Length: 107
Length: 118
Image (cartoon, rainbow over all chains, first blue to last red; front, side, top):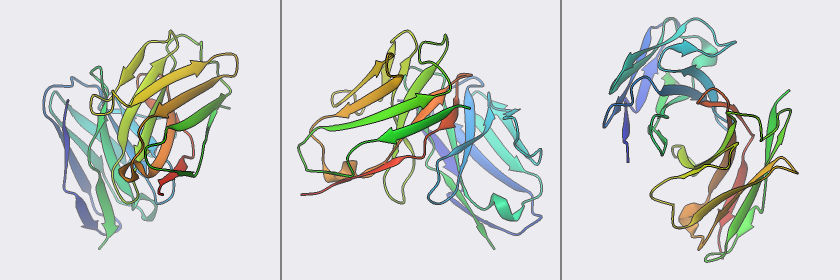
């Protein structure tokens, strides 16, 4: 199994802050890495796929980078609507795996 | 407009078999490249990928649940069904289905909460 490890588990930040979340894979997943945003009681929403491609309709303050085993999701200027939990997911192998999530909360 | 909707029992007894159904609208399951995945999320916990079925009936399973989970599709009804045997209270979760279009899970259903309790 490919293990996906996100850090930090929880992040406290203020509106306007630049926020970075890291996702590490236990072995290379090339660029087959996606990021999702989930709000309480709602289904996850796709933000970024293929490590750095922004899904249509997603604000440009979100960006993704990385390849191989290390990836980052960056929010350039945190907005009130961005307080949520973020998950990475690899889709390179026979079986897919999610990270354990990073909760972004208001400082 | 593409939508997915999960349906199934809200309460299941331990040791029983769980069956949840995903109904897809706006796109045919037989469209080349399409896949439907099942993902679950226990209350307050992380997402867990369970299984995936492709348009050509190729199937993939989570290694940790492979012995208990089966994914099938009924193309005449445009539905994907997940069955999980020998259900346990730790299987209490919201079960989501999601559509794979560009290799990744582009569209998600709203989820259905399944509680396992005697």
